[in-house]
Image 1 (spheres, rainbow, N blue to C red):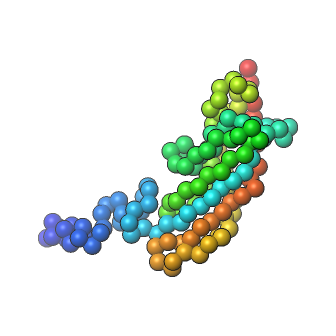
Image 2: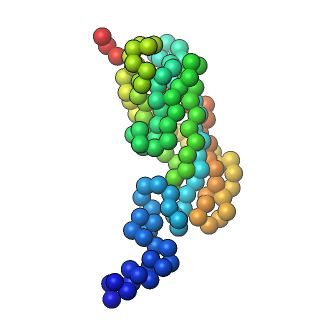
Image 3: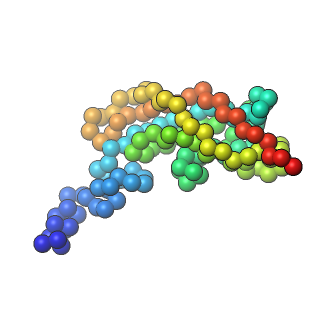
Length: 136
């Protein structure tokens, strides 16, 4: 009986991954597209280049800040991320900075979804995130 149920669910497109909706977007999971933009600065408000900004503790979407400290992350998932991970990836080039987590604020829906599995496009923009220098 169990084998028959698994077979029938498989024919309908349900799998362990798809039915749990954990991880990347799979067929049959509600999902959104998101855009996150902002700037990374030091304690004095000076832009910091070479900081990797990522979702999912570095395993999701990522971007590295440019010379103006700016970053842009585009992604899709079952929901919008709730925090960003920051990590200095350029070494001593412009100083060493501590890794940290930064909470994300509100997202604004900028495009509606189809009303079924796709919930649309959400943005979180204008973030300013401060990083601290490493002690020598």
